[in-house]
Image (tube, rainbow, N blue to C red; front, side):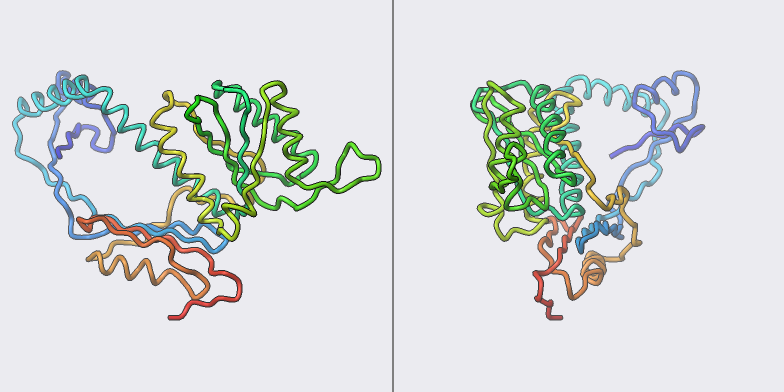
Length: 315
């Protein structure tokens, strides 16, 4: 891989078109060629609630290439032509990269919030308007706060095969029963009945239903497992969505804010050293649920989560 730099602005991030314009304006350009480095950069996210994520990636070293100015000009022209020819492919690649970032953010939000329940909001009608679905979700949240003042959720939108949208919500602290606000005697009813009534009151003639998965699919699931489940919808929906069309959202007080930028722990001289650093960050109250390395040993990731109550890891 080549990187072209405007030597008059070495720290500036310039597009190939900007660099070509700089060349034609007489600015000095330099070319650098990438090579796999021998060290690994180790980063960690302390997400809270006992959750930890660590990554290690091989660093890329850049060495100045001996290229004539006309060769640099020709290279930039080829890059621009290639981007024009592969515009659709590049848009798909950028959408996938955005989806991975969104997936990580959704996963970390769920972990930090300590979610324990998965709700799915559906339509009986074939409701294919995503903007309307988002408006319904916003109103659903407003009405839910009347009965559960601390209600919050992280939501992912999914389109069914028939074209209708439905919404997966990861949330917490849904009680088994709620007071029926329409009953003067304050009768307790099952919480999912109240939630269903609220959702149906929002969507009206479109018809609505809910699934409360706390005692079914997600029964006994950890926050990390629910997080992985709901984050799994992100990549597919990003790839199929329009540009800048958000495929997830959040409402309410999620508690501890996510540290958006990870802590850089330093550089390891080998992948083995990087893996040792990652495992050393865990403690006896955590279990490693993800430990994965690519086949070229260029990157490694580790996810740790709290062990079940009363269980201590043996070292």
